[in-house]
Every structure is written in C-alpha cells, then in structure tokens.
Image (cartoon, rainbow, N blue to C red; front, side, top):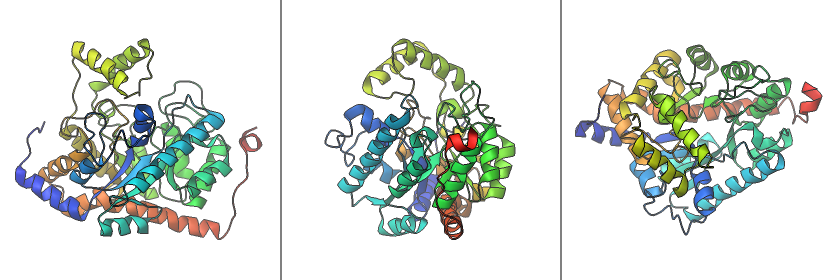
Length: 401
C-alpha cells in the first residue's frame, strides 16, 4: 500500500495532466446541489472553496488536472414516470446554470471537437450524462429530447431494474438483460450519437448491449470485478468484449466497489441510514452526520490510491490500454479513498501509476485520448446511421407486449 508519493513523480504527473487532462466520466455535483441548496449557486459558489460541503469546486478541479467533466444529471429511481423526466430536466438546467455562471472556467461541449477546443482554451469541457433509463419514461422521443438538450450518454439502468433493462444490484426478476425495446433504445442511441453507458447494469445487460451497439460503449464509473467482486464492477469476459467494441471502462473510486473489505461495512452503514429514515445515497449535512456517527462506532475500511491503481492495472491488462479511463463518482458517494478525497486528487493517482511503470503515452490515453476517441467514433456512427434511417417511434408495448 502506497501512502507517500515521490514529489518528483507528483510533479511529473502534474506536467502530464497539464497537456493531457482528465476526462472524468461521472460527477454527481448537480444532485448534491439539488439536495443541499436546491441549486442555489450563491450558497454554493463553485468559484470558492466548497470542501466543507462538496467534493467538487472549480479551484479543486483545476488542482486535479480535470479538463473535461461528464456532469451526471442523475435522478433517483424512486422518481418514476413524468416525475423522473421533470427532475432530469431540472438537473440539466442546473448544469446550464453552472455554465452560464462560470464561462471562464466551464465550456459547454457536445462533441469531441468541442472537448479539444475547450482544452485549447484552458477551460473545462462540460458534458452531461443521464444516469438510468427511468429518466426517459419508456419514450424514445424523450431520449431524443435529452440528446437535443446536450446529454451525451445515458446509463441504461441505475440500482433497480426497469421494464426494458436489468440492473446489477436488483435481485428481483428482470428481462434477462435487454428486452426488444431495450435493444431499440441502444439502436436509437447509436443513431443519435449518444454513448451507451453500461455502469450499473447486470452482466447480461452489458453483453446484450455490446452485441446490439454499433458504436463504442462506456462504463462511466465502474471498476474490475476480478479485483473486487462487487456486482457494480465489470467481469473479465465483458472487458474482453469491450476491447472488440472500441469502448472505454472508466474506473470508479467508490470504496465499496473497489475495496472488498468495504462492502459489508457499507451494507451495515446503509441499513443504519434507512433506520434513520434516510436514503443510503444521501450526502446532505444531516445524512453525513448520521454516517459520521456510525463511522465513529464502527471502524471503516479505507481504500487508497493504490486500491484504485490495482483496478486500473487489471483493466489495462484485460481490456487493453486503449479502453480505459477514469470516472471518480465524486459527490455521488459519502466516502472516498485516502489520497483521492476529492477532485483535486488525480495527480496522486497518476503519480502512483508512474511509480508502477506506466508510460506517459499510456497515461495520456487513460486521462484524455480514450474517452475523446470513443465519443468521436459514436459521432461517426451516428452520421452513418442517420444517412440510412430516421428516428424510431417504437414503443415498449409494441415491441415487448
């Protein structure tokens, strides 16, 4: 376990990130802002230090070498139907408010070219990803509307099954991966140029989506199941399929996913949250007070920079260096690894990988080039698809009965 890193390696990591900054696949800041201050940026001014409340602010994004961010426009799965759609629109609006308030730091990005342009301007390219197919309320027209508003990936499920796709963390009966409508969702995402995100999905869903997709897919925040046997992680056979697909597995930092010893502790901590009438994913001050009280009585297993690096070593070995990236899940988890406490921590991870012998060229692929390439390839597929077919108006009832 590495706790102290060579200052020279940290300096080299920062130099590398200045040229090839991090494309982070998943940050839940919009949901945190919703829960804490109902999106009031006067109360959570991201230009100032918000470390007392959040994992993310502009100074720490800069310190972390983040050059592009997929902001999650996640909504919880207890929001369903039109309520889920409305909440997703509010999340998109929150990102729009951030972009309008901080134009010197954040640049709207809809394409790979936009990402490169923002990097050249020294701004943080800002993209959006919807987290969970419940956000479209079984409507391909709603999917298209989210794309028109700037959403560039959709995670097919969150923590619960939906009627057309199975989640990794729902033990109830599902559809066996993707239903016929689920396959149509993937096809329409390919036609639009919206990346199919397979984090949170069951392995059967992963395999079905990889079989259906003509464009690269992503895992916006998932790590290696062979290293930590958690259902949120990616099995090796899927990593092998991912390489053939051209997609990218973006390693997450969430301790319960990356550190085997953290799983049981987290289950008990989440039960404690429910006993207090709170949602396990809540990170507002009241929820964190409950978490901290539980932690004071029950020692928490702590993941480290090395823990995450172990996953990246494995992902590189199985999927290949062209198919890996980073997706921290900051502000979407109450706990983070030591040394990766917030978005400023990326140089420490890059320094650890340098210590392990990763080349600068491989690290540049990890941080920047792989996700940019995947989005560009999805855009190429979309142009080809749109030349031969129009929008799908299929319904779940029509395809699945």
